[in-house]
Length: 191
Length: 191
Image (cartoon, chains in turn purple, yellow):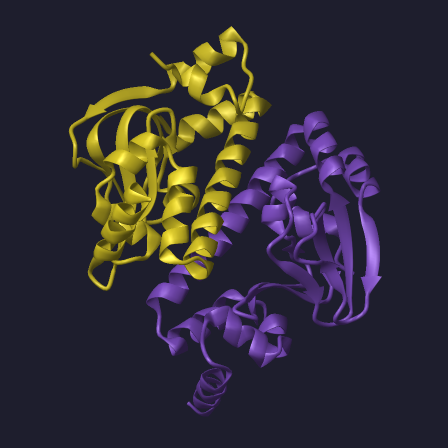
């Protein structure tokens, strides 16, 4: 089984005592599919490390759900803007399949960062990754054709997300119609 | 005169020795208007603290310049994605008016952060601010009317940016036609 240590070790190197302190602040939770972790309009106080599962962030635009972030095993997810500013979230987080997460609260993360500079480094990396993810999606939406966007999506996302995230969510993430995405998928599987 | 200490003190609190170490890494440069600080396609190695001046970040989309970030006295500017990843920048940075900046290199900032956790905190805050700025612009572009976007722009930006940034740059930043922005400005000044 993958541990939190495995998930985080590319980013920070903690000794065993530091890991114990960090993991003592984590809360493991099992969620059924289609459970809301953060509801738009509420303040998000946690970051979630995913042991196993499939989750997404989405918001409403003209009454339609736009997915903006997908995550699966060994990744993070958060309503990051709300988490940072502690103001109501414009987006919701939900499980797409049954999921197990380890969450840490903003307060716990702040306290740990004061005690241990390596946790502040983790906080920096979380912010940088969120920035780069959003920029990547924004630029792709602006400049690529539907097919390029989907090929890029396959390359950048884990096979679990590509294979199991419902087509309608991926289509809204890429800013293309579900029928177009369906056609592109058929073209790719044939060629 | 505003000092770098004034600009940064809302974010980090350093003692005099720490300030001296930090400022010893800064390079003060005077630029004429319309000077390129970072050219798209090159790797950006610096963050710029602005003593005085007016600058913008922009990129090309279908052959047109799209401004994505404005900064003036006592603010920061960077080609942040390139700075973080050390890959070629999709965007350029340039001075709009004569400007004086204090730049710090990525290497210097990394070395300082290893020596002093407070600098790591500054790095985290820079990443968080870049994330929030980009999100803010992205959501505004999606959900607001042209007039709402401009009123919001006035509220969020310094008077210097609002008054002196050329209309064509602001229009591309807001994703509206220059003629529409011109009309909105007249409406606002009359009402």
